Length: 207
Image 1 (tube, rainbow, N blue to C red):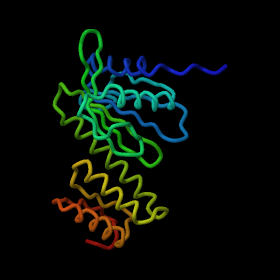
Image 2 (cartoon, one colour):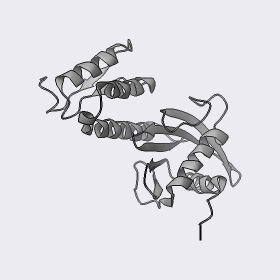
Image 3 (tube, rainbow, N blue to C red):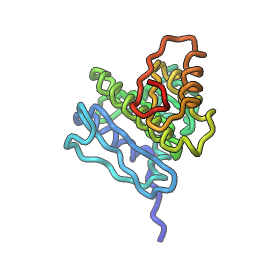
């Protein structure tokens, strides 16, 4: 017997309630080929004792479409419609028990799906900013691990996504060749903004 799909509004209500009850952060990985996933919560860091929410990956993806497309505050979205293949951000609002839960919504493509990160707007954003940096570094490292299978243009695209998000950081990863390093730094310089290069011990032959 086929299990009925979870209602998007009800599913997100459970996420919003977690924030109403004290969570400040959340992360959900929706990757190709997985059957189930979970939304992990935290106050200053993820998974600090607050219970997570498990749901089917297809339901999670549908829920994020609903949250971005239906709950985004006018004028606060980077794009008109949610697209998990593109780096996007928004501010979303959900009424809950007589209060408004207002969250920063960040979606970060990861090559085989999307990672959605949420932050409570009523608390300092430094915890969310640190989590976003961690996820972005994780995605860049994952792509670099597969660099031998990818053409150089994909590494340049990674840099473009970083700068589109307003983050002027180029992270060199172990295993990058000199040609890859040169291409990535050239792409960063083309944005016309100051940027920082974070080296890796075994990246290319560059010291």
